[in-house]
Amino acid sequence: MRALLFLSALLAAAPVPAQDGNPLPADLHLVPAAADTKPRPWAIFFPRAMGLGTLAPGNQYADLAAFLNARGIDVLIVDDDAALRRLGPPGSAGEKRAAVAIDALARLRTTGRFDMRCPGIVVGWSRGGEGALTLASSRNGTDSGIRAAIVYYPSVGGQVRPWPQRMPVLALQGTSDGIAPARKLEELAAGRVKNDEHPFTIKTYPGARHRFDVAHPTDRPDSAKIEKDFDAKAHADALAAIDAFLTERAISGASCALD
Image (cartoon, rainbow, N blue to C red; front, top):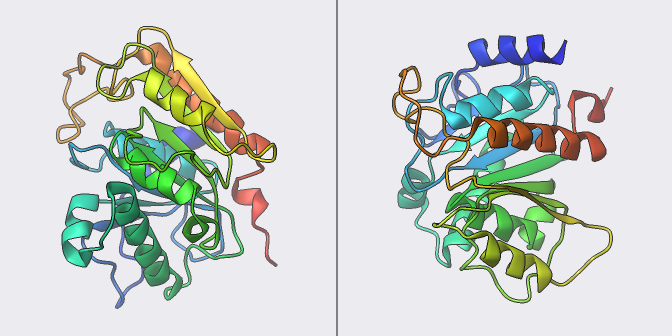
C-alpha cells in the first residue's frame, strides 16, 4: 500500500503557490501532500551546491518530496542561492540558511500552512546540510517547530564545536565520500554536547560516494543517463532509514490531528 501511495505522489508532485493571491517568492517551492491547507507535519529542504535543477520525477528533491508526501508531510524546497540573494542574511553558511528557513516559515504561516502545532523536519544535502545542522543546534530551529533533522553527506566545517544538539538527527553518509568525508561527520557527532533525549544516528553505506542518491542529472530528471556516483542499494537503504526514523518519532499525517 505504501508503495502505491508513493508512486501516486511521485507522479502528482509539483510545486504550487502557497495560496492564490499570496504567492511565495520564486525561490520557495511548496510541494504539499494535498491541495488543502489542513494542518500536517512539514519539511524544509536545503539542496546541495549544484542547485535544484528541474523539480520533476527523477529529480532527487522532487522524489524525496513525493516520498514524504506519501507519509502525509508537506514539503518546502528552497532554492537557497536565490533566497540568499533576496534576503542577504549575515553569518556563516549554516546561519544564513537558518535565516532563510525562519523567513519562509513566517511567510507560509500567513497562508495557514506549516502549522506551528505540527512537527517539522529539516533536510539538507551536502552544503545544505550546514543549514539543517545549524537549525538542529539552535533555538531558532526548535522555537520554529522543527523537531528533527535529516542530512545527506553533510558539510560540517561551519558548525560550532562542541556542537549543541537540540533535536534528533539522522545522517546518511557514504564511506567513500571524498567531498564530505565520513570522518568529519563522525568527529562532529562524537564531540557534540550529548543529550540522551536526542540521538545522533549516522547510517554509513560501504563504498558509497557523495551524491549517492542522485540517479539522474538534476536538471534532466527524465534522462536515461544514470549518474556515476548513484548507488541504488545505498539510496534504497537511506529511504528505509528515513522511514524508520520518522516512524520512531511518530511524524506522519496521523501525528497532527488538531480537530
